[in-house]
Amino acid sequence: MNMSEQQKTEIEAAAFRRLLKHLDDNKNVQNIELMILANFCRNCLGKWYQAAAEELGIQLSSDEAREVIYGMPYSDWKDKFQTQATPEQLAAFEARPK
Image (tube, rainbow, N blue to C red):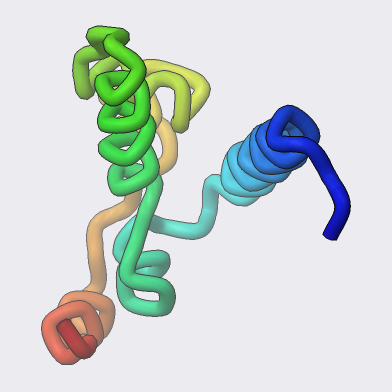
């Protein structure tokens, strides 16, 4: 690959924004399902976002970071879109490799 660091950063940022849009367009996909299949969820992305901000000296609360990821306050997203985990989902979550 022949690209500058700036180009790489811009491409990574664009891919991240596309991931967030994809998650936003698929609110029916629950965090527990993401954890079962991929071992990360929207909350993980929020934690990673917060950590990246802190590495740059930017103070960001976990609520502020999650709002970036969810596109709204986390409590609102939970009320509108989060469903109760099924017994099957909970069992799959516990059985996943750690």
